[in-house]
Image 1 (spheres, rainbow, N blue to C red):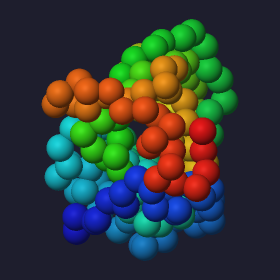
Image 2: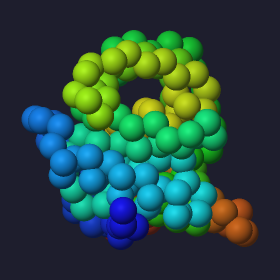
Image 3: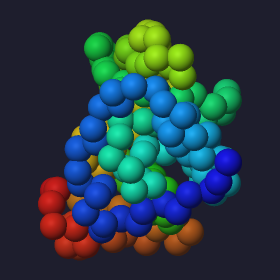
Image 4: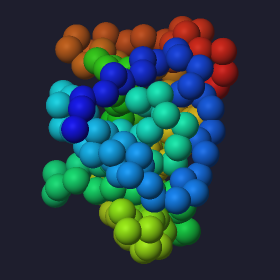
Amino acid sequence: MSVLNIVPFGESILRKKAKPVETITPKILKLLDDMGETLHAAEGRAGLAAPQVGILRRVIVMDCGEGLIELIDPEIVEMSGEQDGAEGCLSFPGYHGYVKRANNVKITTLNRQGERIAMEGEGFLARCIQHEIDHLDGILYVDRVTEPWLFDDKTQRKISVFDVSKLTNQGL
């Protein structure tokens, strides 16, 4: 297993839509393993989508406190409730913003064996699932903030989300 480089905010690949995984191959399994290693090596982590490591495939790994979760070609099939909370991103470390999300999600996803399974998430897990699936669609949390600024994690200093959007040619 290898720790992969995380693509920084502003790189165009983060704005591209990831392609479905046609078949679970040894290459996809290695990607899952490497992404899991990368996620656990990162500070302040909860999830990582393949585009964040430069690969345009619909693959996600998450660890929201109860162990590693792997999602391949995940699809949200139902959302309910509402929550508003802070989100950050491994591609834009050191900042967070407030994002409104569904409090409950139901998804279908492939597992490592290529079987389509159902999964439900509530609260923080639901937030992570939605955040990471957004990455697969080229959407970043800064596109969804409910206030016009982000906050520096250390100083709580505000930065205009419109200034942040200048780092990328799409969004907002």
